[in-house]
Image (cartoon, rainbow, N blue to C red):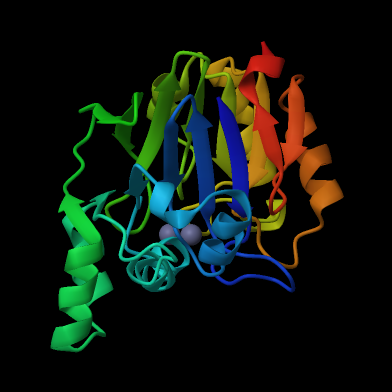
Length: 252
Ligand SMILES: [Zn+2]
Ligand SMILES: [Zn+2]
C-alpha cells in the first residue's frame, strides 16, 4: 500500500502547498481521501484522475472539498473522452455544500461526474479492493476519520479532530497514523483540532508505528512540530509534504 500526500495545509494553502488530500494505492486500487484546494493538480502528478476508484470527503469544510470542482472538470474533459462517474463517499452536508454555489448546469455536471453515497460511522466501504471504515471525529461539523485497510497495511487518517480517547480506540494498531496537527501548542484546546504534541499522544495510545503530522497551519514551524510530537511518541515521525509517498510494505 502506498500513501501519497497531495496537500498538507490547514484551512488555506501556504505558498506552494495545497490543502487536505491523500492518495492511497494498492494493487489496482486508487482512492482519494479529501480533495482540498490544490489537490487536483497534485493528483495529476501521481495518477490520471480518470483512474480513481473512489473519492472520500470527510466533511463539509472547503479545505477538504474545494477541488472537487477541478476534479469534475478533469474527469469531464479527460483526454480520451468523458470519464465514467466516480463514487463519492461523504456526509450529506458535503453534497449540499458542493452544489450550493453552482448554476443548474453546474449542479448537473457535478452529479454526472460523481455518484454520491452517504458514509456511516463504523460501516465499512469497499473501494477497489480496499476496505475503508469511517469513524466519527470530534470536529465542529459532522466529520469522519477514515480507516483504510488493505492486504499490505493500514492507514488511519483522523481528518480534522480534537484528541479523544475514542479516536485512539478507532486507530489502535494502524501502521500509519495520519493525524491532524493543526495548532501550535499554545492554541491547544482552543479549536477542534490537535496540536502536534496531541497527535503524538494519539499515536502512542493507538500503538501505531509511524506518525505523519498533517493539516498544518501555514505558519507553523515544522521542526518544532516534530519536536513537540516526539515528547509523547517514540516511534517514527514524519511531517507531511506535498507529494511525499510512504510505502507501507517497507514500513513492516
Ligand atoms: Zn481542515
Ligand atoms: Zn474542518
